[in-house]
Length: 186
Image (tube, rainbow, N blue to C red; front, side, top):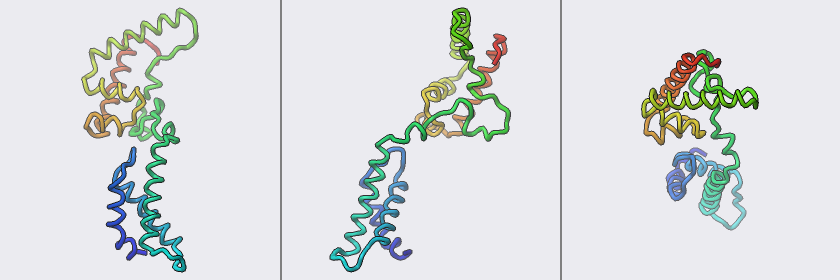
């Protein structure tokens, strides 16, 4: 099996370079091609009229095309790309920092008084954030609230995921400080 993988690895890379995988990279397609090669080794029958090379090419191509089609179906997009307000990916669990859903005030009832107060609090928060957030923090927060993952935000802003996490931590601290000055229970 190792000899076959070494022999056909260049062929798999060549096949994979012809395709684009949404949300993936060239290595993901190469891996899919190698899965196709494995299936070719597993399923090839010597008593058929086809050569192993032709059969392997067919299996590799089909595996890569299946991966590309699967990635474009968006079947699992809600599960794969959701952004949680109750937990941050880089938080590690035990640091005690409040999450965004704990910091952002939410409506307690449909009472008009509460709605007016909530609207005033929201305007106050927006005004505060527009004056205290840096350009990076504003961009990160906007992309985060649009539902983007840390990786997508980092890619769009051309920075590290750690930079994104640090910016969101600063935003949380600034929102918390603003809410403390307004005496709004978090």
